[in-house]
Length: 235
Ligand SMILES: *Cc1c(COP(=O)(O)O)cnc(C)c1O
Image 1: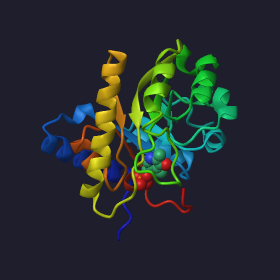
Image 2: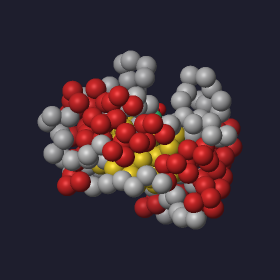
Image 3: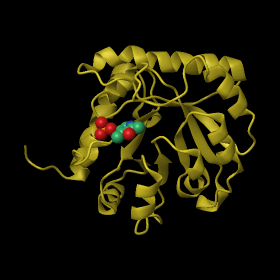
């Protein structure tokens, strides 16, 4: 297969997003594309930024700390999409605009108390990761514990709790992942009734299944391989 550039890949992913939103009767502007740049160098992030990408996802605090120096000034939105240990919460709050995989209250409390100095004190956004699919290898709060956690997190004063995130099982046929995405949307709808307010964000869908996620209501898709190419190490 011929090597494609990041700009070409971005064009292709945006076309796929447009086709999926079209099929779903939605508008492409409803979807935020998060480029998952983990394992890829800072130059790849700059290349994607120059091609028009504005949201980036990293899954490790330390990796992002090590490579952000030359690109941190870019007016992009930086997401932490991987599991965060609470001892790194204060650090993460200063390195990312959004913590997309919060799954316990102690962590949320630490994030709430952490001074966020990034981009003029913009409120730190968080998403709660739901453990959907029951796989032992994945993190996230269980569906049973979700309503209680959401009640606690919504009461914290300094966080923008915006919605839910999930990583469903990998299934060869993306259509078979749709029930998991539909489940996250249902849970979100129930929580909106519980909180009597909107939770606008559903972060779901990766390179091979983001069309299915868009059909089920995703507002953010996290795409790595289709933009930056295959990763050398499995993470
Ligand atoms: C790596 C990763 C992605 C991107 O996966 P691709 O299959 O490369 O698109 C999305 N979300 C999370 C949480 C990830 O860790």
